[in-house]
Image (tube, rainbow, N blue to C red; front, side):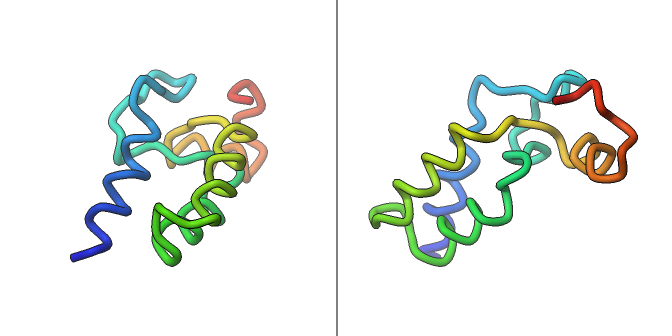
Length: 82
């Protein structure tokens, strides 16, 4: 059950954010291109450790995009997003 607080913290980082395509549902967004690293730091190590500070730094270097647009970017289909 401790993961609930960690997941909630990560989801809350998207408040007020939206993808350039217009998607703003929190569960559909990710921090591109660092989302996997941010998730790992947050969910594995918790939110009250030095890893959280690293996760916050990575968030500042990332852009909120939806999963669909992230996939398009990775495949060279959405250069307009970034």
